Image (cartoon, rainbow over all chains, first blue to last red; front, top):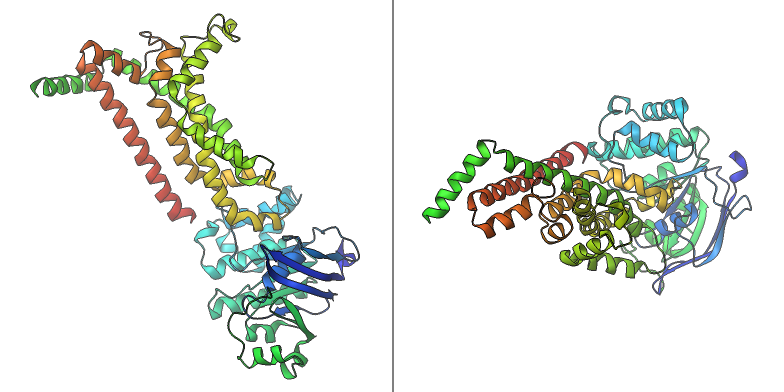
Length: 243
Length: 234
């Protein structure tokens, strides 16, 4: 799998639910060289776009290809805004993800322990996952995703329900995962997080990809009026998608 | 009032004195009800989970049917099982009519829709929470069923107990297929009905008290398990 997965190409993606258009005619290509942050206000279509890329939602029209192929590769993982953890200990949560991906025996346990250690949760390996704090749960979700050794990791607003300390931990771990060779694609409406993490920005507004630019250029000189308004805090907190 | 008081006192003496006829009926009731609940859960839990997570043509009809079967008339079930197991019936050669096995079959048929319908509801709610995460791992709905049943086990324990309670409280179908034979197929409910009709209120009351105590104890256990799981498993 490895390098052959990328580039990830989205071509003319449109998603409609019950007559409501969530994203419309979105096209871009990601080579994974820089962390890509999909930025936009609430309701802009960021999470829907991420789910389409990950293969959780089938687009109404358009396509997603991985290195030219339509097949969804396994070497990708996603961490959700609110992690869904199974009612079992932290270590077993990671082992489950590995087991369903065909990794068994001693390797499964070793990889699960290694992933827990990487996020600083080794001491909670046998604690029930759902009684961990919000920050610990998100770190566990990151450990679980990274244990799968994905080539691409999708992160959907990974710090939006966390306090600043837990958010900083998550950012640090995401940085380490990226340093290990995993391409990062993240959604957020948090400008501070986007500035710290992003290599490039894909700015969505009302379901459309309005602007794509290197992060520094985007934040210093936004080209589109919508992006400029968003950076100035002048866009409403939540925007409506096109009908 | 005095009759009731005297009967109640005698009933308590039967219970505390370890009356063999009373405890034989109690044990047999527990055996057949547990077996029926186990059989119903073995089939009903996966069936309910399957209807909850899979999308297939006729799914809505299946849900409506499952819910309708909650109101399955027990005497009709008893009659059908009787016809199947009677000597002239298709399963007559098994020779199990008027045996505890026949009672287990009838009870299981009555309980299975309850288990399946309740399990479907619990698993469907759980699937709503888990679906994206499990699909993200590449887990198919079918493969998710054992995961969901295990992860929701504490909630589903209530379903199992509801099934057991339904089996233990059944009279009509049990009377028809079991025959209420003393020492063979007489269970608490049929014994209560018989002893009441005979006017032997102490034994009927004694059995009634035991039945109530069992139901109360089971509910207390279910409550304790849910409390414990919420605290320790989140």
